[in-house]
Image 1 (cartoon, chains in turn blue, brown):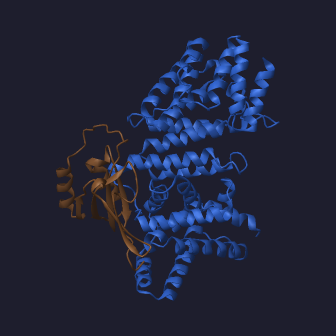
Image 2 (cartoon, chains in turn orange, green):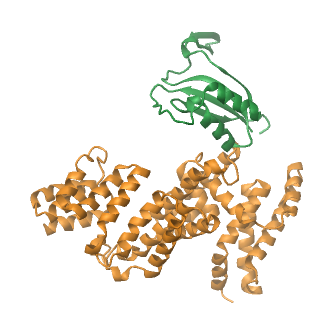
Length: 395
Length: 112
């Protein structure tokens, strides 16, 4: 047996592995011990499964090995606290699914700095290694280890609880978890485009399984599915950015779009007012469902942006609404709607870029040139700069 | 877990009255019922503060606070809570959380 089926088996139990870790942390209250024991179980699996074969119940195997290891370590410590931890561990029959949810809420607690929330979630819930996370966020390995260590210290010292929040805190805290997952989805520049997004997508799916009656996790999952479904067409063969209007829609991932639509319908059937992620997913669904750019339902998109601006006011949402209203009511109207955003969006390249696009469509080429040039000076990356240069050259 | 809760007056903070806002008496009654408040009090403003330190071997006494800041601590409460979330819930209900701010600091026991 080669190492690959073993790797595959380990990937397949990624969720169980996180659940085992979650239970060990809850029962012992010792993050380091729990991580070491789960890591040890994984390493033993990697060395023994190729020889002995992958066990029928991989999760059961890992649980037993990790627990026995924890009991060994606690026995050797021979302290009063370790004795209590050991007894608690022996009494614990299996990992309830709630443990994983507890772990997620603790990792995403608002009393931790946002970078720590991201790092801790990827390390403990997603099971990524410290070097992998360090590479994703373009920091050195020691820096990332320090960040994780400080976060765990803070959880213990500040008394950050290990539980699913009380009902009156649940909505807000769930929003915090979703923000972490969406950040993971959108960032991770040090990885190959989309890899970390796939990890975020997996975590969102897990959250939906753990909180099936909550709409916003489902909204975020749908949003990620739509965005991931068109990721392959975002860049051409030269690595140049392709605006959505010009993307080859036949290459959008139909299965992902269908799954996104299913989750969106499921969330809508709850009858509750849509939250920010459901609204953003609904906007993405309008694009996903349009057979080509001209058949986009801009009227619906404008209405959805209105609702989004009310739920979560932001000048970026105002800009997106202005763009949608330009496609609906004419580019002049869109430009008018963009006026007044300059102060709030100073330094944000998409404002002059969007202005440039509308001016170009109106044939006001000199003004378009000025706007594109301003955008070029603010563009955050090489791909964005090349697109703007292409636009300038085409004028 | 024990937390020191500093009640901070912030002259720059904005206060938006909300339906769920309660008075300090209501807040006190609430925390007393739940047995989560060990003690607490108001503090006179920093204009009444005295700062003491040893400088060149001598006790140096100056009037005023140790640091110049627009924000100042107007009171404190010592909470005994199950965890940070419970402390956050109590702090969020304090009248000064809206218009001022509350800082929660966990105790650091001598044996840790």
